[in-house]
Image (cartoon, rainbow, N blue to C red; front, side, top):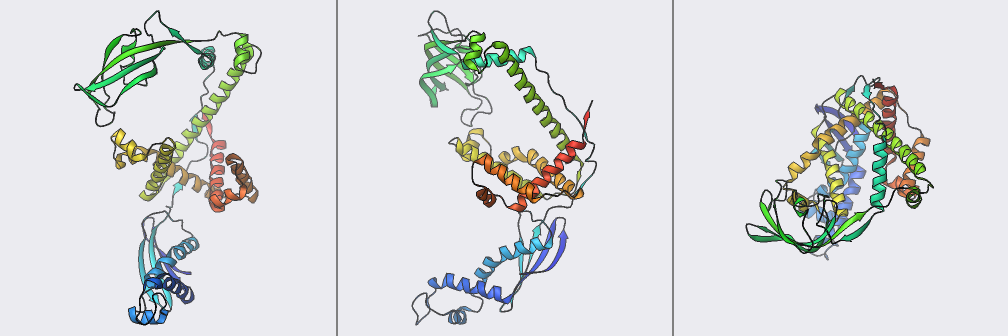
Length: 426
């Protein structure tokens, strides 16, 4: 393969002319012959045994050219793109065969490439960094969470259900006087105030007693799935059991039971320290986000739409994988939410466009600052990833190409440079 020429034909569109030598093309044609001969019948020969020269004489010299071209051009084009110095953006390829025959193959391909961008004022950016102080109320809230985690449920028979109680009950829902699918359950357990049911449902259960039969009147939200959204419904209910949450007393014994500390004061001091660390980390993350927003705004250049669509593809794929891990699928999710694929993809668009701009900005900064990534940097990163995923380093290297990891590390260093030069706004 050799790169014959490169020329820009439009913004972010480049025409690359590629030549495949005669020997390489001949080898590809022979491979195509061997792949297809089993399906070709020639009089006087058993099926699949006719010599190539005879098949070409009968069906034409170019009978195997299409398969040979399809086999050759992806790798030939990939090598040519790398030699050209451009970075290909996954998008449609306009392919044109210039010449093909015994002398080899020449083709032209028009591809989408990464844009030329400019980024100014990336040093000395200003952003607010506010660390929220930890108050006694914050510490008490954490103590309360520990209480709830170590609470127990006790049966209540001398009073009606109250907010925070856990009730076991039967229900059946009706719309327009008719029961609907999924609207019935027996001995269902629900914590009142958890907001797991339709708005207004749990509120109407408060004050109801064990054995009492009653109706709950609600209206399904407009964002509910298509068949029921916006419709009024009546649920016929009967409570079988009410349980109250009993919290442990907060004292030194409590601290010993829920932590490695001997006293409540030590536990509270540890909670305060951890909250301070979390809020410092959150403030640092928010500070970084503000800087990245400014980089995206300062980026100049015409970005191909394909880069945004590819990033949305990644996010949709990640979301679909998450759904599958929950035992769901994307089609069911779209049906439940009443969205089509286009509107679903649009929910990711703003974030995807920002991420693409930030990546381009940081790549440009790495270029402008001549940021270098050493072999030691790369090997250390491979080791970290292997440790993180608990797999062998060689497997990580198979999953993540060295060149891609090098780019990611350069981008990380560019971000570090931006943060180190940034100014915390007063």
